[in-house]
Amino acid sequence: MRKKFVFTCLLLSGCLLLPGCSRLFIVRADKLLAAPAASALQLEIIKGFERQHKQPYTLQAPIYGEYVSSFLMRDIDSDEEDEAVFFYQTDHGNKNICCCVMDHHQGEWELSADIEGPAGRVYDVAFADMNADGFEEIVIGWYFGDFSRNKLLTINGKTSPDKQYSVLAAEPFCEKLIEDIDGNGSDDLFVVVSDFSSVSSRAYAKLLVMKNGAVKLASQARIDSKASGYSRLKGEKATDSSPLRIYIDTVKGENQMITDVVYWDIGTASLVSMLMDNETLTNKIAPRPANIASFDINNDGVIEIPCQETQPLEGGAVYISQGEQAAPFFMTGWLAVEQKNGTKTVMRTACNTDEGYYMNFPPLQNGKAAVASYIYDRRWDIISTQTNGVKPETLFSVKVFEPPQWQKENNASGKYRELFTTALGVAGVSITPAGFSQGLTYSNIGAYFGLTGKGEQ
Ligand SMILES: [Ca+2]
Ligand SMILES: [Ca+2]
Ligand SMILES: [Ca+2]
Ligand SMILES: [Ca+2]
View 1 (cartoon, rainbow, N blue to C red):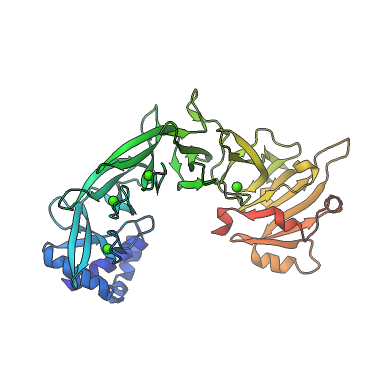
View 2: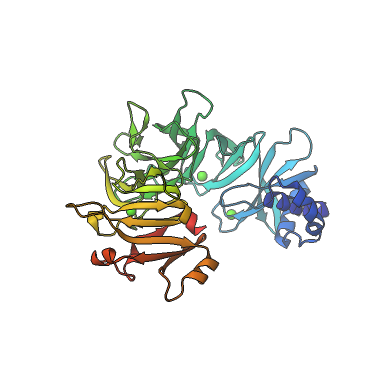
């Protein structure tokens, strides 16, 4: 049995590293067989498991989240000793995947929980003490085919007098977050769920809490329903006295994104979806390109929401090929939400989603210099706006080079000075006399630039 276990582990690790890639797996199968075996600890645990479980089985592992290995060790009962948690599928019968918890007791690993899941694969696993009794509930996400859409989570806990784990609740979800949302000291489960299939699709944020041994829906709030997908949820507590706000970045259609913000209102004991327009049931803030997620752009501990400004600045343009203006250039405003459900713009940026960087507006032209983006040349020209009859002129240019091209073209006498490096190349900057006259220098200009997720990958 031990040999079979080792092979199963290796088989699994190969499958997980290369999902849907059977050809590569076959090539590597001989090497996998010869690769190092599971750890001595894992073999001890599996020995304990096989003493009580006599049927042939295959180990399974979550595909997403903090725990993606076949085995995870965690102290779920607060006795300062780790338990082992793993997933397996019996090779006959209904073949539903089970979650097994093994406890170390007097030198032996013993089965302390064996929880059968629904007929699906394991998406993720997380732990939350939802009733603050020192025993963590196990929150398991299951998927059935397309895991970018709705999945099913089960909350498994020990509440019965015999202290056996049972399924306390099952709930569809698209994204989830475990935090003490209502501020009562115990973990809660915040989920986003969307009806992708229906024409009159609806999407909700829901708060699940545990009371008297049962999991209950404490509140739900409508969020923008025209979603095609979600980014990972982000929670933020602006001050000790403010509620925890959850930011839900929602992809709409192919290439647009909006952000919903939901918080727990203590006064009404309900979730509030603060940016929903209750008449149109859509988000009040204008959408922006899909790859600009909400984040704390000015480093003050508060997440900002990007939005595309409604009016492009005069002179701002996007050129995909030489001489052909494809679109106006829109700036991005960064909105911070305020206590009274309002928002204020704390910063304006130009985002280069192709190259993975953004530019905060330098203090020139009252922050109104326009951007001409030459995508074919990987170059931005920052242009002064026309004031008092003065003709617009280029203040500075930013251009991204492949590293070898940078080496070749940009020595000490080159036009561009190095500004920053991204995964996609080296960005150089060239300041014109008009730019210098507005106070820009090669030593201060770098402070106006930052990398977005794409550049950091
Ligand atoms: Ca323990
Ligand atoms: Ca608990
Ligand atoms: Ca709570
Ligand atoms: Ca901020």
